[in-house]
Image (tube, rainbow, N blue to C red; front, top):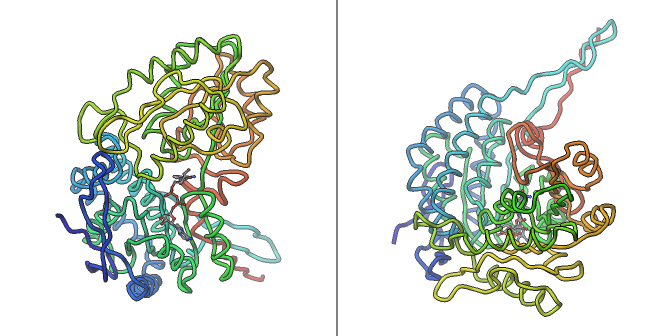
Length: 467
Ligand code: NAD
């Protein structure tokens, strides 16, 4: 069994105990991860604190280090991608892309400008505003795309001048541990510490006196706990939480075309994406045609082990999530939804579930009202567009939404009315470096991505020169 170590103060640390990691494609334990105790967490925090001031004060060094991180990731890419597939289940090609994006991200943030601004320059005063890093960041991450989630915090935190203590999900600790092993060769000791363990470890991180900021990505329920815990010490929080994104198809679309373009926006990574399409609203006049076209796509999607080159959809990541998705589908069917494709687990080992299209779905069914986070798309019918918009908005989720139409003005008018941090037109879930990514309502607190992440890890400092 390959061993994976934590990274604390630049060193490999085995942990006082270990926990099992399961390959979701086989359902079998294939590796062990170190379980971080309180003393080891203290050591990581103290190390991040000690590294902070030199790191904060040397932007040029940070830029060099970030390019070195990108280079190191390129060298370690294949090994890292395989580890991500083994523990997460995603197709290897997707894992490779996520390593590539992580390397690109380090380079982009290294090149990002954060200029000093002048707020006033007159006879009375020169007032300058600079952004200063907030300190040590506790980064707590989910299991759906481990490498991207980790680097989404580490790269902008480095650009800001912060140091990081990073904890992956206990379901997917290994790729993040391996990331730490790769990067500790090129980053100054203490600037990136990687620890692994269970949910208690996350709680200890948010309660720890050293971090000044918490960067959390995960479920709404945990995000709430993180926010409460961080509030006691007035830590800054960046919360990227769950979504239940609605997509609304307008009646000017071709059913086969919209199904073709939309399918992977719901099913990529087996639906385990915060900003996947999770509810689809279709005009009654074309409802059957869209459902049939989506069902055809679902039946054609190749489900299998992520290491198999033909695989398009891997398994669900873990047993609780697999059981939750199966339970949501069964519950919807009991309440009157119909299975147009899929609707059952695959026989054999592993957490495989058939890509599923549910027709006759309606609000009030948990598969519609909650975040399924799996390879299932409920399709809802509407007769009035106003009604579709108000149903799409009638939720405390507010991550993303999309409108699909061949008429750009009509689409833009509907987009304007949707309550979500990002509204896409004729696509869904696309996130470029120049876009802020922020959930409204319960889907998050604060914005991330690009300059917005750097702002989240810095605060303004004003220098007032009296004249
Ligand atoms: P989760 O909330 O169960 O766990 C996330 C992390 O929090 C894990 O590392 C876990 O160990 C840790 N944790 C658990 N309890 C904690 C506590 N009390 N204090 C501190 N940390 C604690 O989420 P998950 O099931 O791993 O991930 C799936 C969720 O993540 C989905 O809701 C998905 O939408 C969301 N997500 C959101 C985004 C986004 O950017 N908005 C991106 C990816 C995933």
